[in-house]
Image (spheres, rainbow, N blue to C red):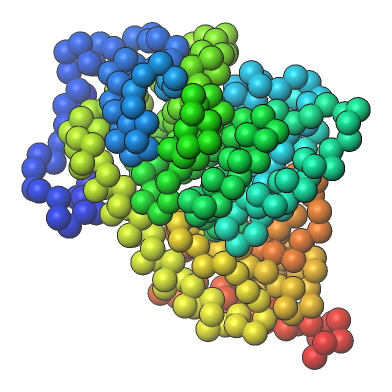
Length: 381
């Protein structure tokens, strides 16, 4: 099986083979049933990556398992951690794909509001300090701390340590999700864990290759306490045996071709690619929306989380489904990203695929027109 590679986004990458061949025992492994945790070679390579990026020596305290995307892994982790009806703490807003599996578990969804740095330690402490004494306490808190979908927020090192201190105080598991495997922005919760929990055991991290390789490969991996990783492996064996061996073999071949240094260079090049798109997209947003809306400029990710409350609008659903839709503008209203579906003044827009030369500006121009139309209806203009 031969992989034909696209030109590298990394302009400094050495010129080399434009194809990789998977053959022999590697191909045989790719075409057969495999171990539930994933191919041994791939897990070994990723362990070395995690050790390098997050400065966590390979040892007995943590392990790695592969999954059919990070969402598959989170579903299985939720099932391992939560009993039916348990409460779980969720940063709000959050990626809506997290919610269906929690609803299937009849989990009690507890919103913890974010601020400009993502999950707020103060808000987390406030929720837990006032928790009723006769009620089951939460076991875990979920956060997407780098280029969060949808808010675009990224948590600093200091903020993460503050959150981990709250986790220590209330004995919480931190469920850390990220789409950006080696973001240089901030140390991860997984890296910082042992500064607060010397023996580890309180952070599980979910990574995906969707934004770096291909979303269609449906490949992710979880890194965390071995007991929890083993429980996820049992769920693999019971539900789908293992994730696609072909996808794993393709990822391993590409990672071995690059090496860790080349992989990190590719990750950085992808980040720069999206940063350039964000810069152009955000400039157009400022051109048309300044004075009407605000947002946090994202340091990672591919979304703007636009707050229309400066225009007096407190329900984006009504505007997006009526005024904006009538002008051909499609965006995601903010209520979708709140576990309890609260009314929201926000709307999420993406710069990942949109044509920045024409469609993006037209979209922002029409969104601004829709906001002004709404303001006139409300008697503000």
